[in-house]
Length: 164
Image (cartoon, rainbow, N blue to C red; front, side, top):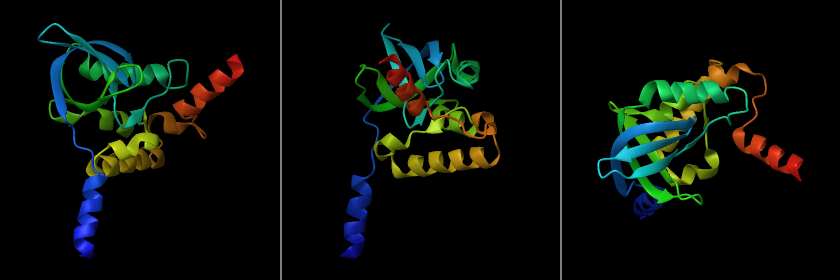
């Protein structure tokens, strides 16, 4: 009985992707947002799930954007997703040549694992992303070279508070 309950709980905490789109990346906005043009000539703004990259005016913001652009700008990618965010962007995992692009951003030290939304990830991705962030920190990759890097969610909050 305990095993069955554990399996049910594990399945409930798992989020599987319901939809998929394939298209060409026509714009890289920043380190976690791109525009994809599909074969039916529709443009979709994609927010990379599970990560939060530095803002443009933040340390490593431009490097994060450039690394993403270098890999996928002008390339055909696959996007697995299951939701739209409050800005009506598709929130999804991008793969290119079999590689999880979102995870790559974390491994390079150019994005944080966005733990606020980790429950939306399946258990395997959640574990991979958390582990990749830990390794990037230990190896001082990318933004982790700074002694106290400011997470983008704190940077945005500070910006909002200073505007008021």
